[in-house]
Image 1 (cartoon, one colour):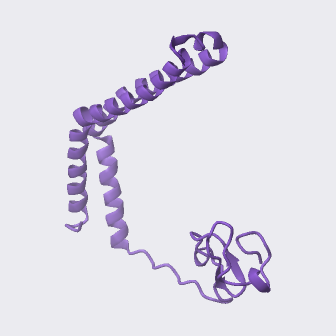
Image 2 (cartoon, rainbow, N blue to C red):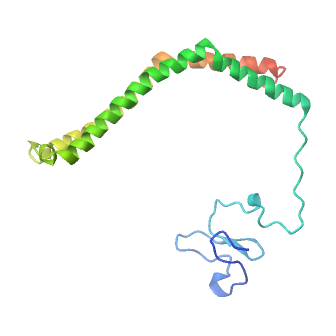
Image 3 (cartoon, one colour):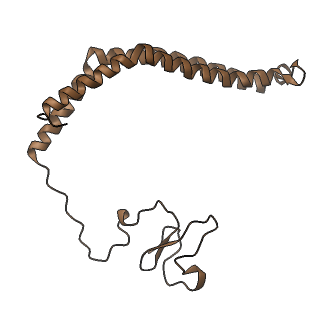
Length: 184
């Protein structure tokens, strides 16, 4: 069996075998079960089945309750009904009418900048003011258009979609609550 760092597990002596041994990045090495070691602090050995004693029984999953399944299916039907509604389709249409042209225009502007920098370096090297050239102005224009696009998106969402989306959310919660028998 191998540990998560790729080395075969087994008995180690000295500083290698110490549970308090520090790696180069300052992370503590831990002993999960027996001789198995790992360096990743986010790694959950028991979730993958490692570190459990041999022959350990995995608890069986609870059998699904028929009433719970019916409620879940009814709640899923509510979400499908909302998705098919005219109000939801209107919110999605407003979203697409802003995002698709915005993405297209921004990518066109970005590709134009990159192609011009590659194909016409003399044009991009022309001085505008002192040491500032056309390439620097266009590069800063990329940042400016990013912020302008983010501002325009937030404004569009606030003015054209947020109210309708919030209404849909409340309606969906009410329908789901009524299907589940008043439980939230």
